[in-house]
Amino acid sequence: MPANTKPFDEQPVGAPAVVNEFIIQDVSGWVLRIGVALSVAVMILGLTLSFVRHPPTVKAMESTHFTTNPAVIWHGVMHGHGVEIIELGIFLLVLTPIMRVAMSVVLFAFYDHDWIYTLVTLGVLLLTLASLLFLR
Image (cartoon, rainbow, N blue to C red; front, side):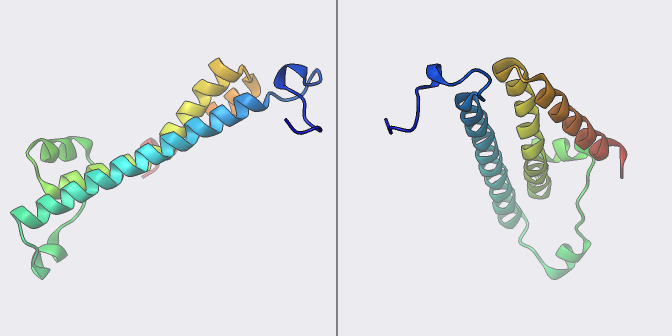
């Protein structure tokens, strides 16, 4: 151990708990990595299915549009439609940072017991969800 550092149990009173900060950062990083990897895998699957089942033509690409209706997307995913599977991957990509903020709320509240960060992060989460759900 370097000479200028103290073990965590010898930190001065009121010093921040560095261990909790690193754990919260690690969990947040893993949530982002897993979310991005999963969304990319889903989009590649959808792209592959699209090319295998319906080889693209210029006319088809010009007339294809994306939907934001979750029921339509879920129906297409259940029937193996490539475009809807790509849309599911896009939704997963959009939800990844939202899941990170939600995980931060849980970690700040139950692991770190930092109620100010919990309330601020919860406010960020609620504003983000409200903007996605109500502002179109």
